[in-house]
Length: 298
Image (cartoon, rainbow, N blue to C red; front, side, top):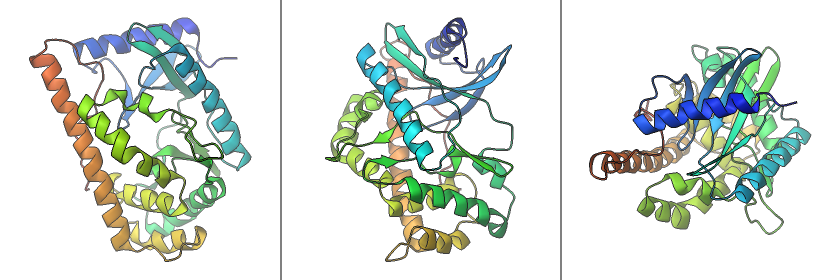
């Protein structure tokens, strides 16, 4: 049984399309922005849901292929012990492309990883972080990987839930990505997209399939989440659980995060410039809702 009905997701998409046309998101209950996607609350008579809208796909085949990959991804993560939040993947056909949503039940306030750990000491956070590291370690292989950053986890009592399945990190036996990530970089301005696809994308994706990369991403991202004060005492846990050699250091974490932050800030600056050109020079709606400026350095 689907989490939401066809008419509900159709009406929701119409609201979001209106926000895109006007450039105004005030009428949407935005839960959070990714670097490319947006998650918005959908309230229904039978519950509230988080709807993550992927960049519209170029064909129905690409959208349907992605829906099948997401189902396989959830199954494989589950086999590794990761408790993935129930997810539906409705597809809508639109003139701009085939829209795929990841729809999940909305979790209780305060359970998302950054919110749960905010205000806690490193000692308080350590048991939860260790469990996340253990699950990441169990699921990272050459063919499978989660996006293990704290913002993709929720803590419900003793239960750890995993959220982010919209871009399935799955590879075949030859190391080729099964999901076409260039479908999602279509949201970037042309010149930036060419740079990302040719020079950056493979390295970004390789990072997910590396336990060292996962550890650096998780720890460094705590700075962006306003939790930079608790990450140094968590480094020894990462070195232990991921069995890293040579061990990572605070300096390496900060350097890794700074490099990532500069890359993503460049991408978002280019998108804001592209939006300005679309609206003010070309006099046409910009087809994406962009995140507000992010303080990436805490």
